[in-house]
Structures are given as structure tokens and as C-alpha cells.
Image 1 (tube, rainbow, N blue to C red):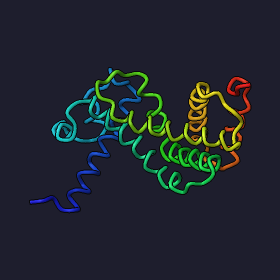
Image 2: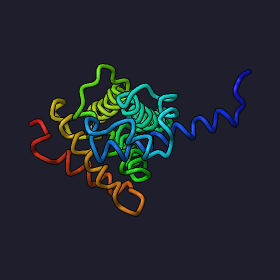
Image 3: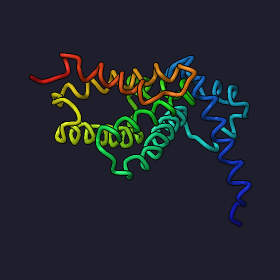
Image 4: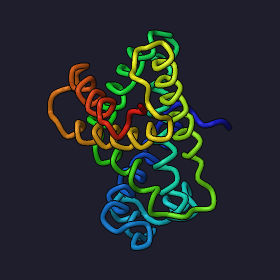
Length: 199
């Protein structure tokens, strides 16, 4: 018999609770120091429940990252679909990412910092990450071509993006919503920095 809608929702809620508990465990202990026991304890489930959903702590870690990146990626689709001017789309995109960071700063920081520390065979979240970077680079290149951004050296563009995302993580700590003015300021700092412009 197929599970009912309620059963599906309960299953998803349990899975989410495990992921939320695991996030705290990973942030406190790193992936090496974390155990399935820790995760079960933190999420308030027995280990049997944990193993029903995930085969290992690596599996849990990977799911947090994949779900987080997928959420960022899917939330940007309406902005890209609007086909606004590159600069405008870029600013809306960054405001959206900042909103996501503000809603869950702990998760957002984890999405950007955790992957640097691990060497998992399968890294399914990378696909969303790379596509997001591709979209951002595309908007910057379109904007440069249409004269909406100063000419930026493409290799340095990615260094600038690292700073941009860290800036958004930092903005995510503010209590007020991130405004267009905040993003413009961040953007201008990056784009007018002599290290990022090509002569």
C-alpha cells in the first residue's frame, strides 16, 4: 500500500529533524569527531531510526549540503527567468541569497565552509554549487558586455565572488532585511577594488 500524504510528511519531518540535529553535531565536532550516536542523541531519535534514513554520518553530511545548495539554487530560478538587466538580476540574486543566509545563518555558513574540510568520494551538492557560480559568472559577463559593470578580469572575478559570499554570510547576521543599497555597497567595494579590475 502506498504511504499516505500524512505518512510522507511525517517521514520528511523526521528526516529534517535528523539533519537539523546533525548540523549542530558537525559544527561542534567536525565530520571526524561526529558519530552516529551523537547525531541520534542530538536529533532525539534512536539509532535504528537514524539508520533507516541514512547509512553513515558521511551520508548525513552530504544530505545537509545537497539539500541546502538545492534550496539556494531553486529559490533563484524565478529571478533568472525574469530576464531582467544583468546588474538588476545580479543584485536581486544576491538579496535572495542574503535572505536565505538570514533565515538560517548557521546552515548557510556550513554550506560554504564545511566542504573545504572534507574529501568525500561523492559530492552531489557540487553540481548545484557549480551551476550557481556559472549563473553568477554569466550575469557578470553579460553585465560587462552591456556596460553595466566595469571590465573585470574573469580570473579575479571568482576571487571577488568568495569575498561577496562571505559578505553575504556577514550580512545574514544583521537583524534587518538586506536591502538593495547594502548589496550595491558590497558590489561597489568589490568592483572598484583595484585588485579586481583589469586595466
